Image (cartoon, rainbow, N blue to C red; front, side):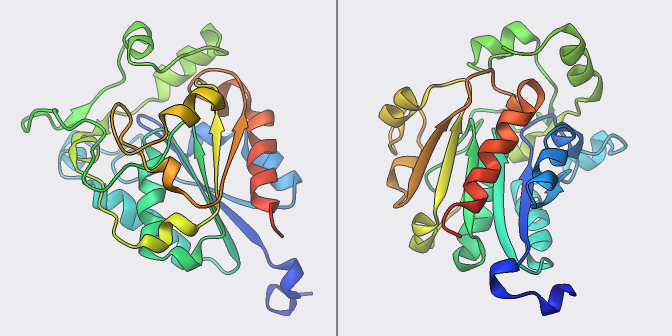
Length: 250
């Protein structure tokens, strides 16, 4: 039976995996096989400026819109249901893709992240002359709330060895969303470094998170306790949580 001949109940479910800062598609390498085994069609994304061979000059001109455009273009080319998964800094990217065409997205999954309110930025105070953000030290990340729990020395070395600086424009540019229908798209928040009970209390438009997570009409919290990078520390459990979310309501 060809893809075109499939009955509606057998429509492919595409899972678009958008990584956070410093990461490329490689960050999902240990998650993808489990999603495939669950009958899903994963698409791990390397965002503009984040490939290993991208140059500092390319990163200097890469914007948040470039990242959103790249994911939106991928989604537009898929035939079947679409589930968007955003990790960390990738969360606001998938949020903006949902905002552009809410009816196209079956579910959005936020992995240790969430959608921001319109006008908020991840690093609003970043100086204009900064063009890229390199991977901080592990201690600096821990101070910022990004735990490396679950990652041994070999995993940390692999992470640092493959990390690419994030374009500063992506961190500095504000999130722009305007379609209220985005809030009706079913969502799952996978909580790895912050327990769901804590996140739920912080999920409002005000400080410190400036998130609209609590404004979502259909939100499910799932705990996968580990550090900030569950795709590296607990890939099987993360894949199971994503697969459960993708199948929800089918």
